[in-house]
Image 1 (cartoon, helix red, strand yellow):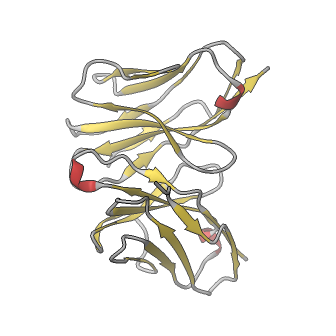
Image 2 (tube, rainbow over the protein chains, first blue to last red; image 1 turned 60 degrees about the horizontal axis):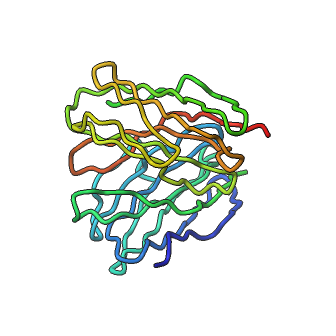
Image 3 (spheres, each protein chain N blue to C red; image 1 turned 180 degrees about the vertical axis):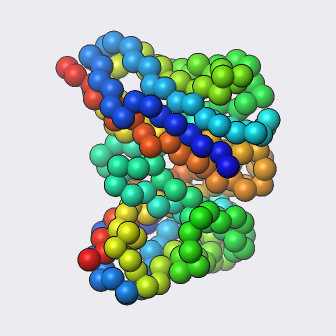
Length: 114
Length: 115
């Protein structure tokens, strides 16, 4: 059973650019959640995808968007990057249909915006 | 909106001793779940223990146990026989009982274990 993986590990972008982060779910999972963790803070919920549909969104602007693919892997896209977007981005996968949704986290992508 | 508060930014404990990390939360929901996650320097968030709000019995996982006080909206984590590998950032998290499975996290407590 493979765990949750994320790519890339680190990324440096310039303000105004666009970035795509990727997440591969744990085998058998159908739900992916994305979180932003600023330095010294707890993770903040960005959005969740369930069976390729958005299933809830946190307080993030529309320039944060996502996709979930038929194999349940996922992408987080951020347009018009701002300095405050510098953070660790975590994805977590889970199996929603069981009634108990334990989320398994990936190691994260560290994004630095300069 | 639900909030989670961890009032201890840092804690330290001697190896083999016991330490308790505090967490309080605010919610108007009656059905919810509470979690403690551990985030070591490797950054990967690992689930330590979970508690369903409808269960009165406190959850226990080996050396980790919780003190869940529903009326007081308090959810503390006790680590017994602390080990060097327990050193990490610990986050308390809340999840509502609805179909939106988002986790709301506290700011974390950095635990240091001294040999």
